[in-house]
Amino acid sequence: MDRPIAANARSDWRFVIRAYLDAQWEDQRRRHEADFQNCEARCLREFAAENVCRDHEQMIRHRLATLEMPPPESAYEVVQEDPHRVVALVDKRPPGSIWSLVTRFTLENNAAEWKIVAVSIPCSGCSPRIFERHKGLFSPQEGLCVFCGGSGKTRALSKRWRWFFRRLVMTPAPCPPCDGKGICQRCVQSSEKGWMNSFTAEAEMQKRQPKVDP
Image (tube, rainbow, N blue to C red; front, side, top):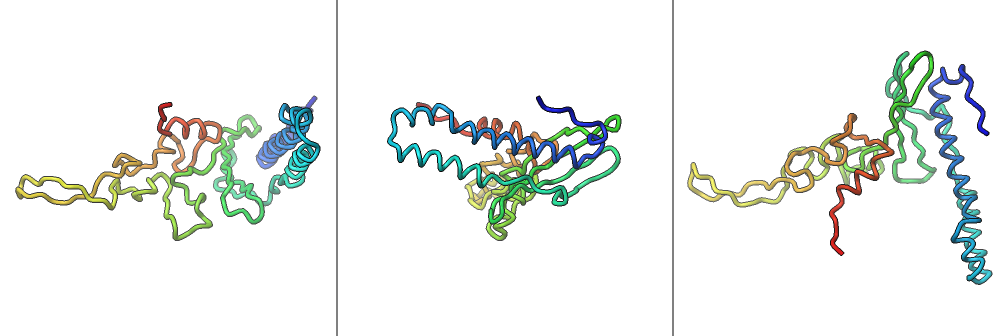
């Protein structure tokens, strides 16, 4: 049974973030450990050759051995810090990885006790942190459509009549991903542009994917 966290520890917002990251790490470790006895493992032991079972177990042991520990508190990037509110960024990117794994924590102090009020991840459609290792290929801006840069227009031209001049002219077409609004549609509902709720981001992405008829 887990022991309750002491009241004096709750008064330190860094301890709260660390407790959350440690809990995530422990969950991952337990999931990998459980893979030794899951349905797939039992099925392989019954129907697979010995070398297949051995390779499966080695794969699980490799995942356990390479499971990255959470970054130290000294690595937390403080965006805002005052007696009642803290915003901090934690990069959980493994060494050598080219993709950002930043998590944005928002905490509020209530009755001398810090509480996590939001856990966010960079918006995959407009956050510069997603493409920070690929500067020059993309130039995203938080909250703006990455395809049109916020203009709402594409480089493609469409024919439109200008009745005042009574002639046909070529004008930029509306940007399809943002429907000409110039706003990133992935984090448009988020209170913090360029960031998405880490617990609802996957569901929101699935909603926006076009449905394919069987």
